Length: 227
Image (cartoon, rainbow, N blue to C red; front, top):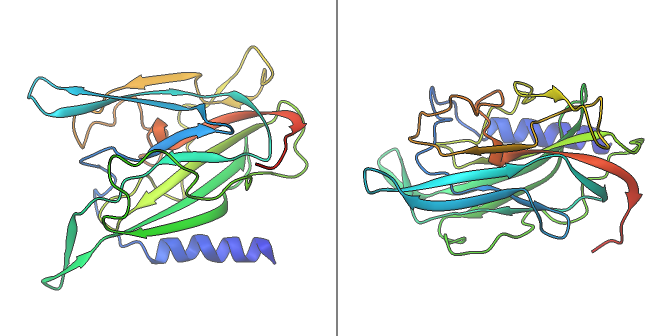
């Protein structure tokens, strides 16, 4: 029954998301996976001024952390005060999010939680938090060394973090050392600065997903206290 509900949930997300030709290209990059379990850091976001004087963000992300189950993901979300036009009527944005995982290399995406928030409820100054609840990634039948890919889907109807149907496999490589040796993982570290809303060269994990939204972790074989 849970599997059916999760499938329906994913379909509902797709149905609620209108089709735009180039809508993956974001003007601002405010949302990202912050950390995994106990705020162990995945993404470092550094804001600086570009040559044009405008603020630009450099992301450094760290993959392949060893984690105990269940996994809690904390994320930075921003739901600012912008508005969209719908039939010449100004309406508030609704930011919709979903937390998903799949077991590499061949597992399919499972949606574990959804969240939505109206315009203006999460300012830029808000700290990262577990908006999509805690302790909710715990794939069964995993063994020590198995690799789990986790991603944060975000859309406001005019942008989305990536194509829900994509498996984010473009940068997967076989890890040669450590607990996940011989397993497909993302590179240990990505560092990049999006120069503009169309700059995706070298960071597109597939389906226009960029590294701040997707992380690979390696299961330790242990469990941790529910927190």
